[in-house]
Image (tube, rainbow, N blue to C red; front, side, top):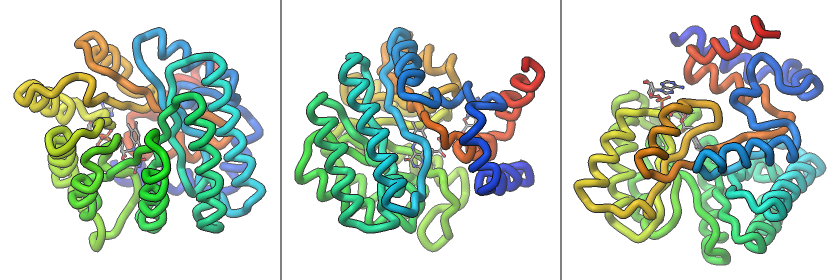
Length: 303
Ligand code: FDA
């Protein structure tokens, strides 16, 4: 459904709708895929997910922040969530998008912000994942990740299988905790694979390499049951212990598959976004899988 995909991508970038959505709370079924607007609401969701035997990685919604005041506000909200997680003793780690805390404003300002987050997380023995954004942010993100990896042992990042650079990176980060994804942004053929089959194949290859070439921890972040089953077969054939990897999925997606993996004895981590900036995230999820439109239809018929 390429046309529908383009419609949702265009809607996700609409500034008027983005601004309006911040004032109205979670609507149109977005509460099924967003953990909550506030820290307290999200903590309740995290408790619920933990009670189902799964861990959580939280994400403060919103990216591409363009001024220091807003970036500082976003960093403070992340610190508030880390504090609440520590106080409540729930099982959750942090996922951080550097463009939200100043990457597009000032490199050193961003580095200071992320160090503050790292320090707070460290006091609560919490892991921090630095999310990978569009390719324009790749070099700076990797530079910050490498700097943080020298200073902290509770940090990891994401490799996107569509990027040509991912195969070199998997060797570079073979002993680190890395999340593997297909990649969510539209990138040029100069830097990224374009065909779905190639991206899928690359994802499997990267995961296999990371599981066997080093001592790292592998987060397999996909909703693709074919890839998940292939990897499980590989894990069994190679006797890879269950504490060397986990599956990750987005909050609200493929809940039965999440449950089934837990029942089969595998670790599952749910990526739970929260905050007022839910609209663009929600539209991107609809673009990825237009069948998700049934969330909107159900919410409208139930309201
Ligand atoms: P994809 O969307 O390609 O689907 C493959 C197949 O799976 C479908 O054809 C269908 O059969 C099945 N399927 C998928 N969703 C389904 C559903 N809801 N119900 C039923 N069947 C379904 N990206 C990025 O660039 N940087 C990042 O930092 C991250 N971080 C991240 C964290 C986590 C936890 C996840 C899960 C994903 C990301 N991503 C990401 C996004 C990622 O790059 C990718 O865009 C999405 O996960 C979509 O790709 P999938 O691998 O899930 O399968």
